[in-house]
Each structure stands twice: as C-alpha cells, then as structure tokens.
Length: 116
Image (cartoon, rainbow, N blue to C red; front, side, top):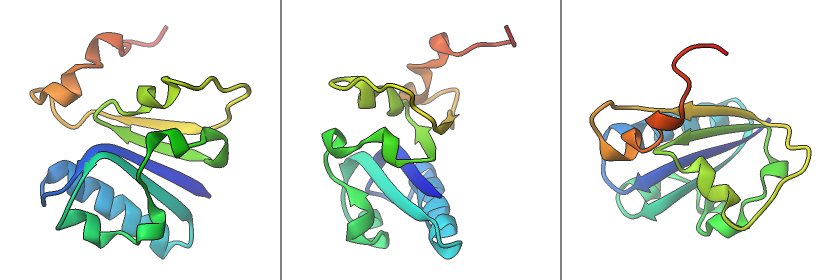
C-alpha cells in the first residue's frame, strides 16, 4: 500500500507530531510505502523520518500515487489548489485532533454531523 500522511507541522515533540511519527513507523514496519508532507518542518521531529520519505513541496504530490491518505489539520484541501483529479481512488482519513485548536476548527463547519 502507498500511504500519504499530511499534517501542518513536524517540528516539536507534541501530540499531532507524535501521531504522524507513530503512523509512519507503523507503515514502515509493515513494509508499506509511506510519504509525509507538512507545511512546517524542523528539528528535532523531522529528523525521525527518512529524508526520501518527506515531500517538501505540496505541488509535488500526485494523489493518483496513493491508496490511503491520512490528513490532519485540514491539509488535504490544499492538494486541490492548482490541480484537478479525475477518477481518484483513495481512502481518506480526515482527522480532527482537538475541538479547541484553531487548525482543527477550520473544517468543522464543512463536516457532516449525521449520515445523509
């Protein structure tokens, strides 16, 4: 499986960073291909990833290359800023880690609260 992990920041040892580190390690240990993108990166956390697995420019991401996308901090919509995709076949996990953090609240108004 090819997985893409998206987050806003990978700098400090905090909750959302540790979530991505744990997922990354899980996929690597189970022999999956995994790539990571964050809007902001820095030491020490970015040092926990193989540099070949880190995407440094969101424009380089092609969703057709992935089977699974894990997105936290509402990063996923940024992938459509300059691209359109036809016949996209991915599993998307959109994660909201906090009801208080502004990065998490920005998409809540667009989420369904009950099934259609």
